[in-house]
Image 1: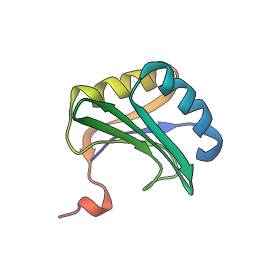
Image 2: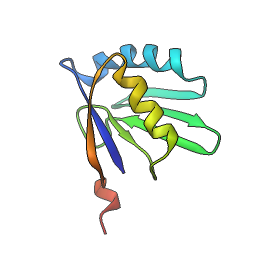
Image 3: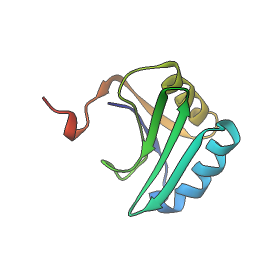
Length: 97
């Protein structure tokens, strides 16, 4: 499910390093990469939140379920960036019923 989408002017591949720097300063269990798309995985125990461009040209905050980690990631992003939080999580294309 998609919980939020980031808002920025540059292309996602140009924004990747800024986002990496910010997330690395706030989360110790982080994996990331950029190859065709930009992606980050934030972990806390069994919880995982993805921030990626797989289904959008802007980074989206995604997780399988709502969790405290989703809220923490969104709040952390909002410390430095504009983030559009969806009132209700949206399904990704592969999640359609």
